[in-house]
Image (cartoon, rainbow, N blue to C red; front, side, top):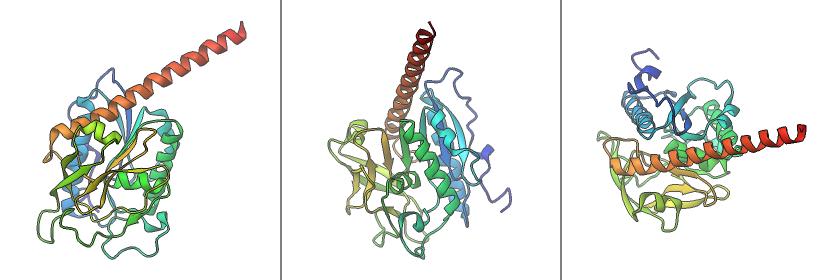
Length: 279
């Protein structure tokens, strides 16, 4: 793969600088490149990643971009951030959720990148950080909890374009009442930008369905007890509704800000207790 036909970090980093005093500092996990990546997907990843990072900055957050195209040196360091954002990419290796051979329509499978992603998720969750996953990111959150993935959606018309047509479609998505996602979006139906051929099948431990497609396919999952939220569509596609993107990213950044404040308060209490014990 040459520099011309791959995604470089400089292709996705926004020109706008991150705030000097951010509300929160976010770990952004992405697979900028993966096996057999297409020219179309290269263009999409460049645009979607840049929009996601710009949105974080616009909301007052700073970030560090971790690219699982190469082995991560220290996935456990995700615990040191205020939140974790998981972006899209290739399919998850089916061995990660106990399936057999890869589906013939699978693409971009990289088991090493999957293992790194699961280690990052485990570290962030153990530290009590809010986690928001998009597309592949949502599927990773489900598999990390022991869930499974549909190998290929046979009746795909709601979820992606036909061969020779644009990959992404505007998909009506029903938001489940009473969920965190419903409180964030303030709607019982949204129009999401979708281009996926896989989706969540069996739910992972402690997760509930937060959104469904009109054909019943799961389009969102969440943990009712913490900010552990995934959406199958792409709010970071700037061809979609900006208001929904800002609501989703805004809720995540607010949760990360609260995590930052809670960590600071805990450290202050520990410092005070240490001084008192020495006195």
